[in-house]
Length: 224
Image (cartoon, rainbow, N blue to C red):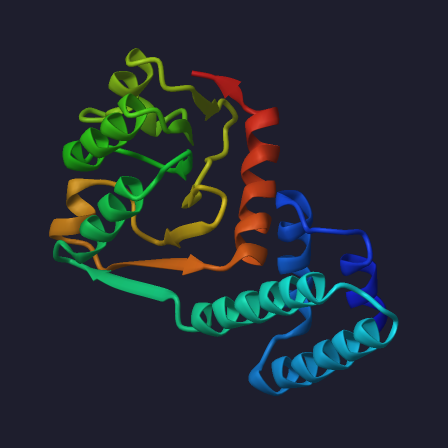
């Protein structure tokens, strides 16, 4: 552990890219409270060694502050899970809030999109400057009531699976951090009649895995 801390902090101030790398290291290492306490102990041992070697106090303070702050965020994210179930409006409301909260990027991979309220929120995100990409199934995009044509007509990039099989995912990634997934298709019938579920996660490791899958699909599927 001490060797890893030295690797990160002996290279100077952590920039954005190295901060993300360090957060992923903490997520994979400090997986419960006991391990986080052990890491904090190692962290202060590392700080004491830095003081003894003549390092600047400001540098040590920034190092301690950065790590403790990230560990605190991790402990909070243990509970940063939201769930919703249908029939009813709770799943739809969670999806709309997920889209509304997007600031920079929204990657959507959903089997079918036909709920006009959700579509309107996607269009609002696009018009306020959020980078939106949509992956969907080619067969479902032709269904009566599908909003895929409308979304593509507004210049949102859309890709489809033109194979005999189906692009059956139902997930979205907001700003590369927040993952929304579950059985729920973005349709009116899912809200009114079906027994469905949605879950939203705030976890960088999981988000990275979903992002990798989305990017792979995006590279291999066809333009709408």
